[in-house]
Image (tube, rainbow, N blue to C red; front, side, top):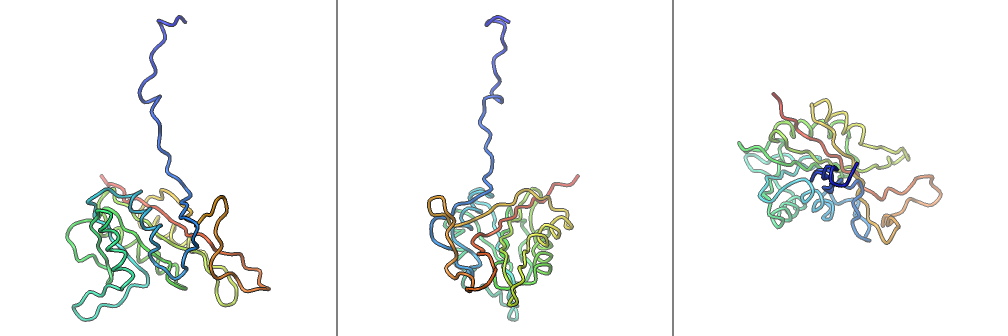
Length: 216
């Protein structure tokens, strides 16, 4: 084949394909295990999975009970909603399990990071709510973490989250590890496991991403 007879490479062939990262490096500081809405993880999720002016709903677990006709917004959720506003998104919360909004949302971020939750009940709740409030093509992002019982049993919510989402007909897109990293080393938690135990240190947060598919 002569040079003149070669076909030019198409733009598609030379285009750089963006591959989503499966590891989010969060800086050197260890994560607070009691923080339901870690700032660096929330900022990553908002930037990665929504566009400016998008409607973003936060779903914490367990959800606080409504006080009469009042909608209760817990202080940590209020701070997270303010951070979403600073990122040029419209932040919404769902404290009673309903959006109280007629407009669908683009992204639901659900946190299962509070203490020792029932992973099955929590996963079923947030996925049911996400299918109710997200628009077609909207996303559900679930934050979770392994934890130990008082007797030393390791609980991992991952299976419950994925099973509940797939049962709700959400498409499983990605599993991301979010971890504090100093240089090339993952930063250990501030509170290490008690001496003499066989527990490994839980230093990362799991981020699961699901899609509300378009039907038709």
